[in-house]
Length: 244
Ligand code: OAD
Ligand code: ZN
Image 1 (tube, rainbow, N blue to C red):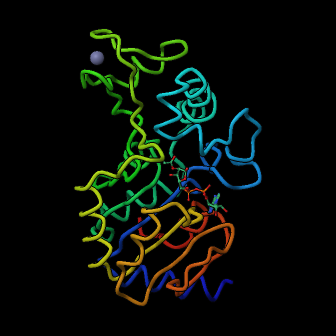
Image 2: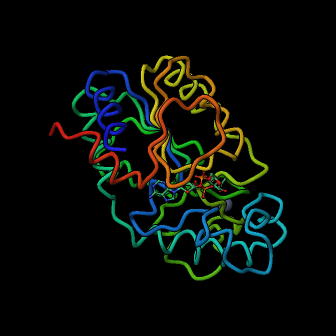
């Protein structure tokens, strides 16, 4: 393992065109549970399967159950979290001119809080809440402080949280930029994702190089991976980038 880490570190040291693609496993070291691990959100008991709850149809049909779940399982841990050493390393790599973009499936905003500037949030952000009826935008503050289901103060419409829900398309501009960064990258670091949720996971297939590095607690099935380091993403990133 140490030899493998040394090899990957050398690849990272030598490149100024690295792109990062991450998922929920990037934030577990900040105390936010991921979705599909043994203690992930989807393994915790609820009256409906969580993947169903986090869908646009379910949201419109049962906003109260949706909001209850969202606040307890998603927002509360996010609001209590701080960026971890992995987020900080990535921000430092960007400042050093080595990392071109952070592409994330997470909505928690921890990359930005750690100092990353070029962050593409494929699944939205907890900051961009909006009314389904009139489109008015609502801050995280307004949204998080309200008890229960959150309605618009202008038209009483239901407020859609900033996250992209199952059954909704991803932002086409963010998708386009993601494809562009990944296809031009020399090194692609993928971390903390099960790589099963589409269309996000398939975006990795735009990578054309031979330095696709996976940092994950568990192996994932993707035959494009060139180097797999098994472990915690934050801890591994700290070992892989030490030039600060
Ligand atoms: P998952 O929960 O599916 O996968 C997280 C992966 O990270 C698993 O393979 C874990 O083994 C791994 N992991 C956990 N902690 C880790 C750590 N500290 N270091 C390295 N690896 C770690 O999460 P995602 O792949 O991000 O979408 O899930 C994708 C999407 O599914 C989410 O964006 C969300 C969810 O439904 C929506 O809600 C639309
Ligand atoms: Zn409204």
